[in-house]
Length: 294
Image 1 (cartoon, helix red, strand yellow):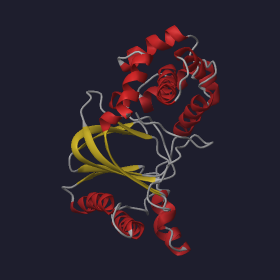
Image 2 (cartoon, rainbow, N blue to C red):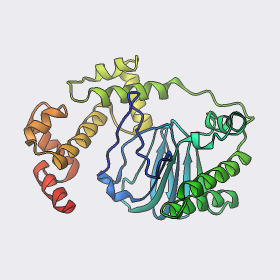
Image 3 (tube, rainbow, N blue to C red):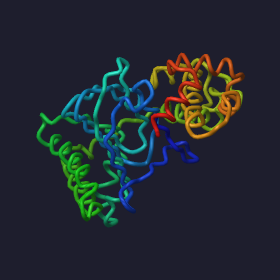
């Protein structure tokens, strides 16, 4: 089960794993996420996904694409995104997060080659296919970075590969085009998500969520449905349930104490909701997860 740590602005804190470089590299299975669905999140880092086997859907700012073997996606910084599979198909993929500061080797490079792409609102993401030669080069770069992770001088190799990939992406991007006007709806949604993630332990109503985005309840519901495919209350409940899994795995708190800690009004309702979500009771989940970790 995967969780997401958050900054004060509710964007994800990325725990880098390449020495002292702002780089995170891992190979993962979609089944490692509950119900084959990663939690929706955003971060300041650039993200690369390359699918090795299987397939999954990927939601970026409410747009859903399908990624299959030999395909992937570039996700620009600050975009709301997550991978999932409604039919619970397995997907073996590489995920790489790199902070754009790694590209800024000089002020001139930053101004001329980094910021025009980073701030290009007309390209929040780019689906990649190995059938397109230059996109195949980017996917090959993702694989090369993964292979270099444990090699000598890994930070140097990964940095070099990232600069090369950015050069390819820059050459095939229209940075002179007028950017699409970005709807304020996305910012409103992130504010409402941030409110839920900050205050989920408290009693929260639909009106509270809508007020945090300075919109009415109707628009609040429409935004959650458009970008995430759930109601605000469904998102709130799912977030509370995800948080509860950490307490079940890592503490000896009782089920009643955990229910109260994550915002449920009672332990019976929490247990019933958890079973529907996880096909196991909280106690069964705790037992099987701890046995699996031994």
